[in-house]
Figure 1 (tube, rainbow, N blue to C red):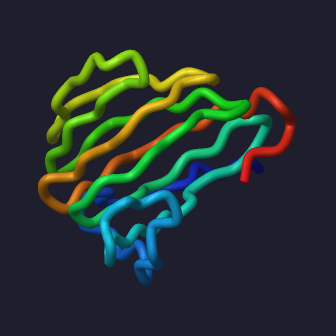
Figure 2: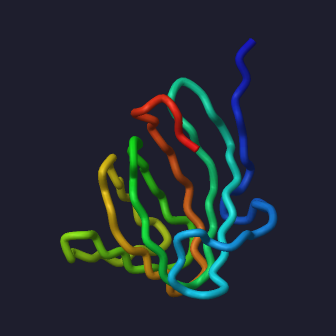
Length: 120
């Protein structure tokens, strides 16, 4: 029997302990990611990050993001930028590069489509 995977409230779920954000350019910025499901080249979960700025790339995977709380500005490598906040939905496709500037603690639900066979 196949069962559903359920998170009762993604906006308040305890995601665990934050660790330093590896690609941050802001000292002290932290993040945490809580996986919910992994199967058939797709993964999903909740991610949270504290204010600051970090670089981001999508090597070998597409990502769909739904912002649950917080605010940020994302600047793409071509200089285009957009603001995100609760309710924002966007896709960063494989090959995408940019910088995230987090204004207030941000939480998102993410879905990753692995294109290479190994997403870490």
